Amino acid sequence: RRFRSFVWQGAFVSAGTMGSELMFLLLLLCFICAWTSASLAPSVMVVDILGSPHTTLATKVAVQVCAGLFNRKDSIAGPAYVLMDSRDRRWLESTEGIANPALMSIADFLERCLHTDISNGVIRYNITSQQLVLPNIVTLAGVLDAVPLEDNHPAFAGSPIVFDALRELAGFSAYDATLYIYQKHVNQTTSMSKMNPGLDVHHHPANPPLTGSPDPGLIDFIVKERLFNFFLNTGCIPGTREHSLMEQMVRNNPWPKPIAVYGYDDTFGVEGDLFEAETTCVKERNLGQIASTGVNNLAFFSRKPRIDTPMVQNPEWEPRRFNASKTYITLIVGDGDNIAFIKGSRRDWMEQRVKHCRDSSDYKHCFPLVWTISPHVLHLAPDWARWYFNQSYETGRDYFVLPPSGDLYSYPSLMPDEVQNDFVDSTERDCLLLNTSGVVAWEWFGSWAHAIKTYFPKYSKHGLVRSAFAVDVPFNLPVPSFWELWKHDHYKILNGNVVLFRPREWRGTSGSSGIPLSKDTMLSAKQMAAEINGYAKGTVSHIYMTSDGGAKLDDFYDLVQDLAEHVAVVSHRVAADMALQASIAALNSESLIVI
Image 1 (cartoon, rainbow, N blue to C red):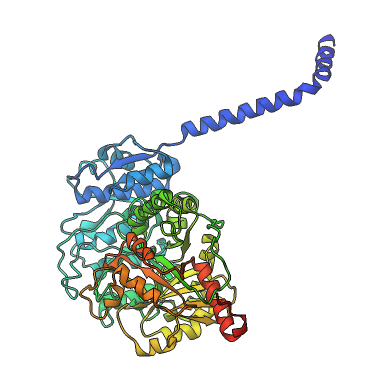
Image 2: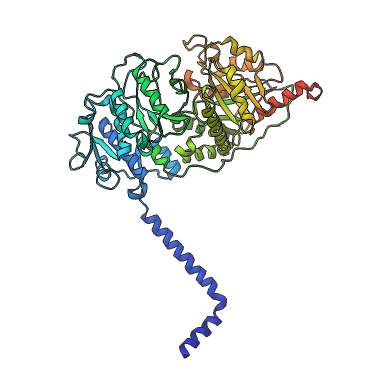
């Protein structure tokens, strides 16, 4: 009783301090738990292929497959990161803060992959005799959780054989292997991917020899996401059995529509690769591309939660009221639909851009600049998206729009209504997440009249897309009916709230590219500036820069130095505002502001 009385008395006496002590203990416990959790979390396994120049293709394939499996199950043995090109270290440091990673040997990496719960075993094959069907074997690796290995590979011994490709796919062509895996495994896959096994499709398009090597970069992501990976050289050519199989696959599958095709189709190049946008490959017109061939470590970056809340773009700093004595021009950095560019050259350009603005913040050195960025970076590599946006905050004058042609690189006006409506919905969702209202719009050269009449007006309903910057495909074809649509206007107003800008592409500065009818896309910076300076005052237009002809970021800087005083470089949002205001002013001439 005395003891209990003492305890109760003490409790009452210390009632004023008990709360703070209890709170301290709870916080200490939370800290210990968090520290323990962090210390027990698997660290990133980093494997260096770039620094091992004698690594065979078969070993690279095995490493990439294992990277995909590790990153799909990163809670078991930890995530995996593979150094395959010079930028991999830079991205690892930028996103993970790891400047000098401890490297795991390739042998130890494969050993851990094959002898944990990461994989079920091996796929037995021969990369020399079965290189043509390697894309299909990679599909099997993803759906079977198995690592392709040759008999003589050191890691092969002691591993169970999950699939014997030497027996099951003996003598198979690319068609045979694609049909076999489609019939057995399509319902275990999530979308399409195309990976050239090494065919020389540019010099011998109809019957290309197997003289090159496949790029294994995308394999980790293909495996992680269980993509249906293949390559049919004539898969987009009507009348061939490969095309018949392609039609069958796009009609009967479990994949979302329009179907996103990862990798790249470089078959039948005609001033570009004829089927690179995928939409014209099949009569269903339900395909679009996510250009990503050779991009490694997407399995690592995509294991993190996708960005599902809107990003924040820079505010405008230009006046938002139309001035008829000025010319307004938006400068757009293209090629952001290609994930390889986002990983590579566009990072270099962005770093160069930030340096320019740090060196001098005046208008000529830090003018408004618009970048195309694939909306799929939001889930493929959310840390990359954050990096780009953070860089834009350094300048305060950089902005982002959707690349060709919105959600996917495609020709959306050719899609059937149901698929097209889904495409529009996806593009508008992308605009919300990237906090943008602009999109670069590529369309097949004969479809513009139809696109303007039926496709682009669909964006008027919600008003999320306010500016579309047109690019004709192929870029150099003069189409009389197309140009008649524009007459001499630089843009068209659709339904009162969507501005469709006339194509103006800048591919390089050499004056000639050897491609017929392309001279005006290869002007020098001085020539391009003279063209813009010569526009009628009150004009609102844009320049879309692509690297296809060697154009570089410095060309925009050279251009701006030669622009006349009445020319204002503006963001995509200001361009849309000016075009809409100019349109209203043209109808109500008394509201024009002339200075």
